[in-house]
Image (cartoon, rainbow, N blue to C red; front, side, top):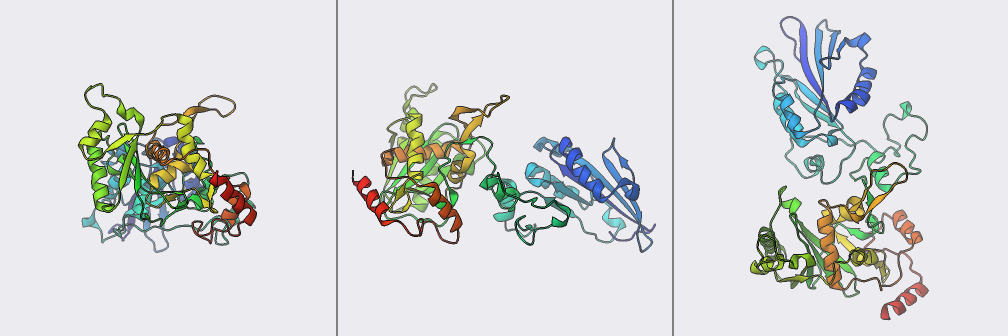
Length: 443
């Protein structure tokens, strides 16, 4: 702030948290550790405002009002409409809707009035644990290169450069008993996701099965399709060794936040194929339920609509849940010539996150032991993963496959992260095991 005629430096800030409970239990407690009322001024609980009043070394007075607000829903943006602020701080930003940030950017720089002061700094600052890769924060930090925001990442809690260690108990950042994803987010400070349910595919191991730069090979592409109001497609190839390469996906939620009918989805699918895979042969297979006649139009089913729009799809061989589940689970847990039987490419963000735990059995809310539903939770990730199931069934994926990956091999993959798992999944394979594998594959 710049000095004003009466010798005071005035500013007004808003501190935002997702709920009032979090605001009071966490943010306010931290704030008063930094700025106790006895030293910095009174806190007005009714208005949730801290009136900070201090005389500064240069003889001017600081008059700072800090407004604490909970804005956990997009409709709460209206609470900001009348605010005139110098700046704002969003605490745990990943828990707050993007609409809150957008509105705050228009409310800062309004106090003090510019006609009474020289130009002063104004803006929005945020802190957060790393969010999921489909969050607005991730897109703002990693894909929006407008230059309007700066992002700063703290080192891992396991790093010698970890911050705040002098104020924490010894071994505060111990990883014992925590999952890899939890450690990735809350200790290493990397993007990730925490499971809300029970993973359907615990066989999926990202360091092994995910290859960011996986490229299509010269082979036909099978496209698995899942229908409904948010249809999805999975693009699959089979290489000469019988491994499945999942090279791409098309998800309604990536195209629009609204629902999408079969006609529009068929057009989007045809557009993607013509633009990105013009020289490949295709076959299309979908959820057998798509062969049922619509209640609104007894003369047409989803497959009829697809064919009318140039997508000649046929029903998958089965809708049986166990067989569908194993169509992915078996090749995930299979080695083919020392390499995983199923590889997920970098274009398959929704499928990758679904296999890593977003596609799950929802927990039943009961007291006592953890219990889960016996059918997958329907969400944005279930559709592309189920499209993959149908595609793999059509490709011939079945439980009668060679030997599975052992826990010891998984540990080797994790320890050898400097290697590309696609190039060296088993660093020194045992010759006898390879011979046994070859005999099993020929049966």
